[in-house]
Length: 170
Image 1: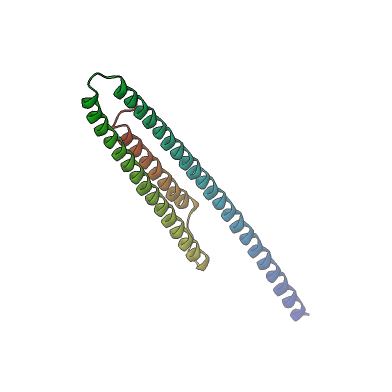
Image 2 (image 1 turned 90 degrees about the vertical axis):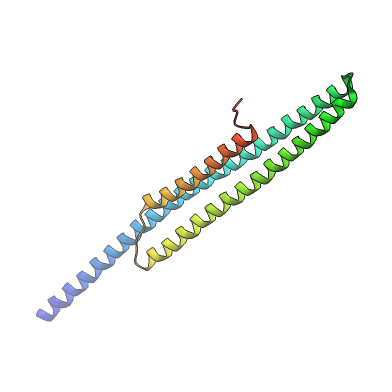
């Protein structure tokens, strides 16, 4: 009779352990789903910032085209056509250089942002792999990394805007 009671107690303990493991796995899965949702939100924000950056580049190009058109109109109207042509050529060259510089700067900043995001995700993936092996990374640290990447993007965009406007907002 004692062996029967012992076997029954062992079976009950095993079932409780299975339930506890299942509950822990469900909690971990819920945590990972929340973390994935947070990553998706950050990626959407990055996409929105990238779209806004592209719009800003288009706006700058439009303004530069209008300036070029106005400069060409001034060229044809002035009495000092030869002098104006020299100035216009200088301005055109300067505008083309500025446009090339801004495009190069945008490319560099986009590459930096891409590499930062890639590094953050790679780092996070490594941490998650280590976490599965036994360690545990807090959700707060993951969010802090993503916030830092988003802040880097904003700083780069402000820097680009300041460079394109020569430090003037309007």
